[in-house]
Amino acid sequence: SIDVPAMIKRKEKVVDNLTEGVASLLKTNGVAILQGKAVLHAGRSVEFSSHDGEVSVLEADHIIIATGSKPIEIPAANFSNNIVDSTGALSFNKVPKFLGIIGAGIIGLELGSVWSRLGSKVTVIEALDDFLPMADSDLSKESFKEFKKQGLDIHLGSKLTSAKDNGEDVEITYETKGEELKASFDKLI
Image (cartoon, rainbow, N blue to C red; front, side):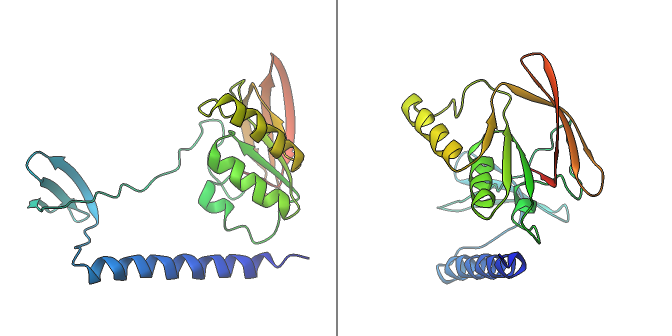
């Protein structure tokens, strides 16, 4: 049996250590860390708005704007206890028996591969007809074969139309070639 809570605790410790290490390196090298919003202007200047609303114009020889990322909620699948983003998928307290992933993007496939190796039955619902369409076609074909060999059940050309978190599981409806299909998962990413 896999001790998922211990894995999550270790993951959080590793993330904290890496974050503290990067912050320490920046500080040691004289980098000022500001959190808020920034607009880069010509002439090495930045208009910076802090979280409390204070606006200032800063100038520096070197400027790093680290934008971070924010997950996008799909209209048909609003985030909930069992419908989560990629960060939530890294915090499950047990291995989901059935895991649904909406979209065959890099992060979803990576998460699907990890949870599959830990014992989840993983289904990927992808709206596009092509697998990894932005990748080289040979790479795409080989990646598709590898993910299928790992046990991922991949449905291309399938559009999610609804997802309902019932508290215990998530029921979804999706369309494939005009046919309406239903599935149920413990968790949905």
